Length: 102
Image (cartoon, rainbow, N blue to C red; front, side):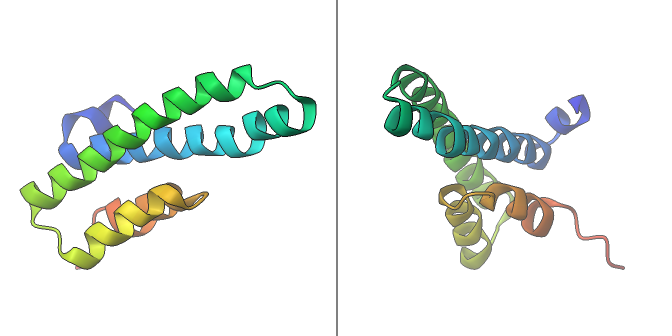
C-alpha cells in the first residue's frame, strides 16, 4: 500500500479507494441511520469527511490530467466515477491501472 504513495497515479488510486469507501459508508450506513432511525450525527461526520475526500479526489484527477496529458474522455470518466456508487473502484480497474498490453 505504501508503494502507491510513490507516484502521482498511485496517490490517485489510493484517493479513489478512500473516496469510494467514504461514499459507500455515507450511502449505505449513515443515510439509513439518519432517515430510518432518526440518528443524524454519523451522517454529519462522515458527510464532512467524504466531502473533503471528494474534493481531494477531484483535485488529484485534474492534476494528473494536466501532468499526464489525459484526454477529455478519460478525465470525464474519472470525474463521473466519483458520483456513482462503486464508480471509483471501476475507475481504478479500468482507467488508473497501467496498461499491461505490449
